[in-house]
Amino acid sequence: MKIRKKITLICLFSGLLAISFQSLADDVLGFEQQIEDALKIGGGKINIDVNWRFEYVDDSTNRKEGFGDPFRIRIGYLTPEFHGLTAFAEYEGVQTVFASKYNNLVNQNNTSRGVVADPERHEVNRLWVQYAGIPDTKLKVGRQRIKLDNDRFIGNVGWRQLEQTYDSVRLTNTTLPDTTFDFAYIWKQRDIFSKNVNMDTFITNISYTGFEYGKLAAYAYLLDYDDAADSLRFRRANHTYGLYFQGKAPLAENLKLVYKAEYAHQWDFQKNPVSYSTDYFNGELGFDIHGVTVKGGIEQLSADNGIGFQTPLSTLHAFNGWADLFLATPPDGLQDIYVSVSTVVKGVKLLGVFHNFTDDNHNIDYGHEFNALALKKFGKHYSVLVKYAHYEADEFRTDTDRFWLQLGMSF
Image 1: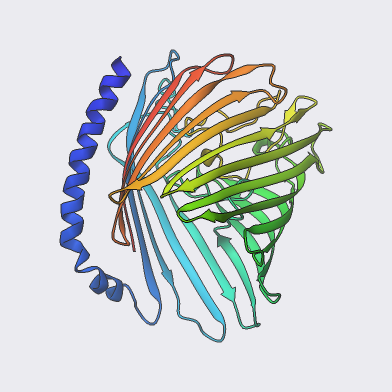
Image 2: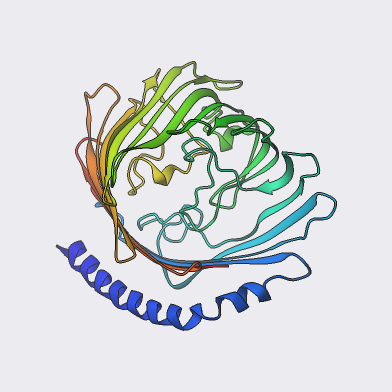
């Protein structure tokens, strides 16, 4: 009851804050074009991204509740193109405003509290040079954002305040109709704790969008690490090959079929001391009826020799529940059976998701989780988000509640 009362009060506060934010946004919206024009300097453009978030966590352990309000700002500049060359530099900083009563997994001051993985840091988030002087080809070198398909294998962990980026060289080619070839070599991962992880990783992703009812992608990701301490003693080293397909098809007026299917095979690579061979499968099917989307799916990460299928460069928060209890696949694997319902009511996006978690053989009941989200955007640049996750444990970890209130502005 204690957690529910707190969340009810916070939700009421969120509603009042959203009304105030709407009024503020209405006043500012008329000046958006002037602001956009002012950010265009010297033929280039200044980017500004501001995000304030309150996060609360209670994981039902002996630890105290964790809560805080990490505030993030990103400021970047994109140069004008010169003979096919452009460059981009971006600063990123995170600092709490009113409270920092949480364990950010970096400091040693609040380890007795729940985890909010947003340390206070200041860093160069992105710094790259791109050459586009060859037709249908882009070559980008430096610290950059990489997001492929649905971020299940390669992503930027965009939910956390510090973004995951990659020091890499990336070649993208679109010469063939409806086809994108994406190749990259990554020598350093800059993770969400502002830590450098040295690696020798090659990624290949080839996607085709010429089908009427969906996108097909084939990929190969070869992850190798330089330092044992940054890779669970090289246990994260793996190579993965897979196929991904996602799309939708109209069935009748105001009725669409939505679907997704993905399969991948993974095994140990290079200095990994454990020999294993695992599979990944995700199948999803649903309907969009008069703007209400209902989907059901199953995602399975199998295990072998005590090692579960791994996606260490993924945007993990987007998968297997927002309580973040399955960021690492358990040694017995993971099967996630889920159902989601989403719609938009008066400009507010509403989403609810239910997960049931077991091991990959369905012998161990890990637990189940409910997620809920409400998102309102004001024009092109402002947003308010309220988000909640409730996990009930059976045989894995402990009951966990997480709540977020977030305000954002981006130009």
